[in-house]
Length: 258
Picture (tube, rainbow, N blue to C red):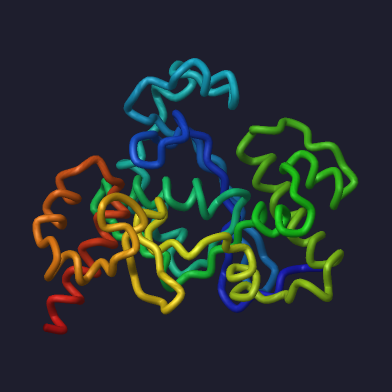
């Protein structure tokens, strides 16, 4: 079943120097952009991360320092990549937890506010785990009846993720609706406000801290009344750029309501 689209959607996959969203960098990015009329465009690009690629990471994805030493840095491609992604919904495999947050960090380092709040973000892995609970290789075999060749090649993983989602729509017509907003909501596994889950929404929809001494307390109350110095502490701390961006948004919105 082909996707029913209102906006273009980009399936993408990253290969990186590691799994720390706040500190690691992209070494390869591949995407498939699908338009509402069914047209597709795809691209695969190697990126010089500006830091050494650890051996254990290279052994996973097969990309070594020598392979990317002459490639553009993310700074070189950020503006053009942002134009490609602008106005698009997003999808991937484990993308809500890893690929989207890490991509946002890369953009924020270049001063580009890659805001996903108004985008629908489908995590195909979360749909799979809710309904079958396995991995991409197993998902591809289960849903598509094929072995995933070149696993951990970003382009192969990206194409497989698209095919798995289309097969999921065919297999679960009573559970899934062919609508990007529905699939994005269905594939969510948490109520995070920031990608790292440092700030979440409670059962009443209020933004609260999800760690530390103020866990469970409304962010606005802590920053404006209970512990005003907490904002400066977090902004100077080892938190991701996305967490700091969300914290600042809540802080400024709360101040404006006073």
